[in-house]
Amino acid sequence: MDNDSHISVVKDLYSAFGTGDIEALLGVLTEDVAFILPELPGVPLQTTYEGKDGFRQFLADREPALVYTAFSPSQFFSDRDHVIVLGRTEGTVKSTRNGFQYQWVQLFEFTPENRVRRIHEFMDTHTLVSAFRERDQQEPSPPSARDSRTE
View: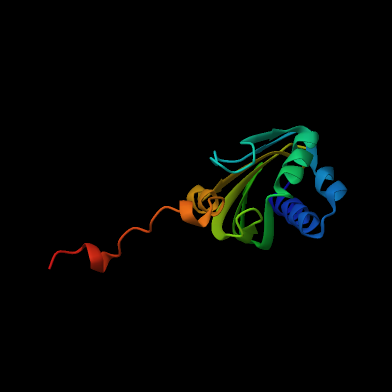
């Protein structure tokens, strides 16, 4: 398949995710797909979800925990059997009502049949982990450059 075809599949996947069309989303994944997230201490998501049932579980795990207010893929790059997407996400943690926003990179690996076999997400883990903490458990902000300079 050509690079544009892979990018088109990823855009279709994002569209299905945005409209809640789970069957269309699952239709572009292989049976043994792996969705890999970074370790997120205190966040009720696994680091790896395997197979279509695993991907369904990811969707089920995030539903009671997160409200997304923005999910914005912005740049797409493709080479052979991989697509890299840059984007940003905003939302709220339901249990703490803390907002979050972070930038991410998602790496998609394709089969020769133009189906997604692996999705690996990279993100600012500190931002999401902090949003799951109660406000009184938040880590203090680092001192500003002005506060830390010697006069």
